[in-house]
Image (cartoon, rainbow, N blue to C red):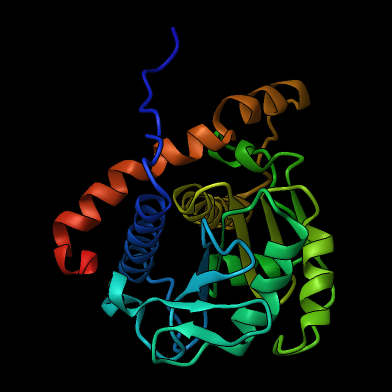
Length: 252
């Protein structure tokens, strides 16, 4: 029997779509903070503007994820200028996300943070293995950027990351962390959350023994069922509702 699913509503206007994206973005930052994904000034989530499609909304540099509300988000153009908002942009956020948004017109949002288990797995010569149902979300659908060159301030480095990502939903940045993308903010944020947890499960399992892999055909079919954009959006909705209930000020 198919599981019942919500259907993402269609915005009645560009302004409504922009507001939805910004609310999901602010909620994602609060949720990332609650999950311990914040690490000083590192980490960023972006949302493409629905009208100015070469611009994106992003968190301002140096502001805690736990304090971000809709009104704090800044709009950055394709050359890195802040065109709405009065706070600076994280240079690494621009270098990476601008190139991903340019290379992937289908991508509305991209999420990157220095989460603990993502960092740990990124230091090993491993991908996400199909050892759990949840990990199958990334089966044949993530890459590894195997070339750490320090802080990413050069858009050319961002281009290389985007090329490694290709048409997939995620990439492990070697010795750095995780990056996920999606056709909605909700989807990209959920992929990051479940990828981080899959990293944790894999590290724990390998510390205890040699985990058994799910068979190729089963892993591929599972990815087709729970690795879709609709599934990613749906999985985020309970977290969005909880986060807004806990932090109603994020909507301001």
